[in-house]
Length: 219
Image (cartoon, rainbow, N blue to C red; front, side):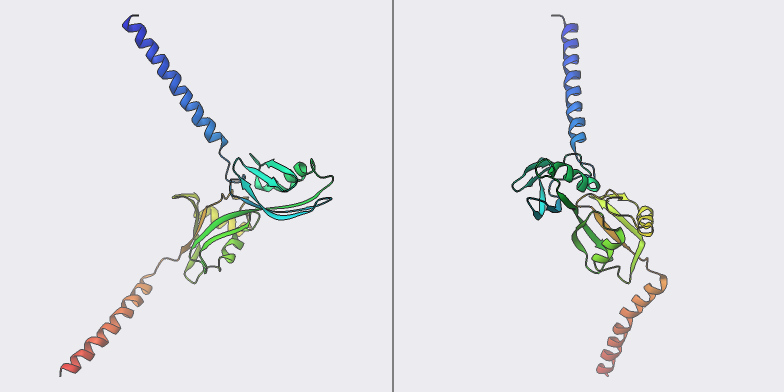
């Protein structure tokens, strides 16, 4: 085998390996749930009326599986939260005749910044964004809702302009494609020059009083 042939075979093998890695990467990314689809760890408040009644909060398990006692497993892969009730009615109908299904997907979201009770909250995915703020204690006196953003990790996924529009137009978590673990950070009003002066005076006056007191004691 000549050096040229060996080089051609090496290049061909390298290109094939690269194509395989790229294909696997694209496939794995395609299988990741979209923000408004169900994720592992999500919960659904589920009520089923029929020959077999169910009333429970059920967990989305590994493999995006919903396990219903006495019925079996239902796959939620690729299912949007907004379609949960219709989809689950169709699936449960395979096990129970003419069931009446009420399904409310629940989303865990962090509400941080200038709210009365910052922290993580689990709430229905069809709740209004404005109600999310109120459930976290409402905005504080220094809050500026027009400076509020939604973060996913360290990235701003919903800008302050988009949040302001969502608050004014009454949009829900589902409509905003909020994903589990997203952080809603309520902004703070910028400090004015007058506020800064008041803070300086608030520190300076006690110090001046202490200096005068110590000076009088030395006399």
